[in-house]
Length: 121
Image 1 (cartoon, one colour):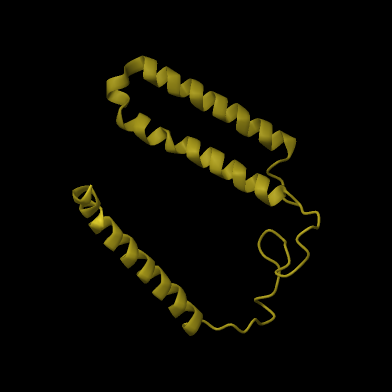
Image 2 (cartoon, one colour):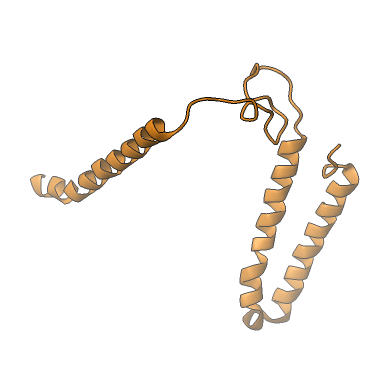
């Protein structure tokens, strides 16, 4: 049992060092950072929320909808890179499969566009 615990000693040292570095960074940022808010810092964020306001109010979800759509379509484009690299090996079936995938992606994009999910008023 003692030998097994000795094997975990480097992990314990690593965790202690990691927490020490993280604590030093947090402490350094609190000491070095300016804690004086000014008018421009207190303006609304990109999403339209005021910096300090009631958290239980109704909010507009358009910002979140556009960001989620961006993540979805951006992630789908990431599938194109491995496909392009292995196109020579996967042959015609892989090419047609990717065309089907891109077709479904295009139909989804057109649907979202027609529904007005990408309109920012």
